[in-house]
Length: 200
Image (cartoon, rainbow, N blue to C red; front, side, top):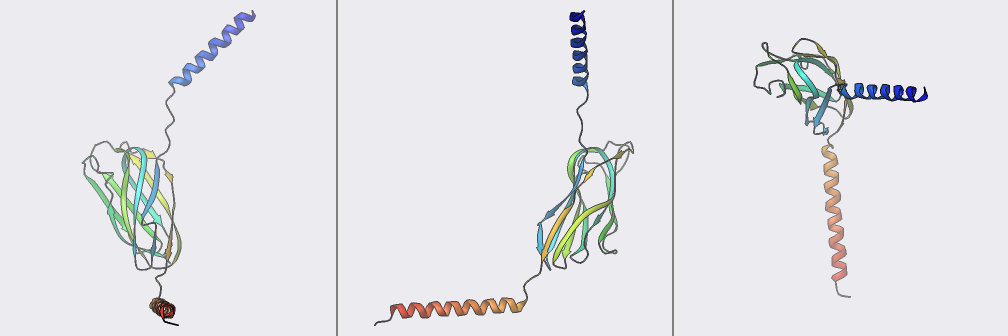
């Protein structure tokens, strides 16, 4: 009886192992992220953001709102990224409100045309340009995110954030004082050198 029970246990374990072996591999959720170039800036400069999706399958359409601190950044331009049209199909892209509401680029969307499959993989969905208008730290994040596939089923992404640090341009007086200091230092070195080479 003991041998029979042992055989049943081993057979059951083998069946479970086989079942787990044929289970599909777990697919991680796609990720929607913000890539900044450069990753910091000074007042008066611009920073370009790519809204990038990775690990997505059959993406047919998307929309999102980007939130940021309007004390430091101001949106100035938006263009479509290359990902949704990577297969050569037609797409539509627009932004409902680029800069009318401080602190958000409202409802950026892209969609493919026709009864065609979506796009899989990863790449840029949208390219946004920001003017740096203040010095400080701004955290950029997403709201109202919707991704759908070619059957109009929701795709649930993981959302990342991005932190930008901006700084002020030195005032002209700062440059002037720095220049005066350098001139004084050069004169002091010249005088010291002449003192060393002068005869006793």
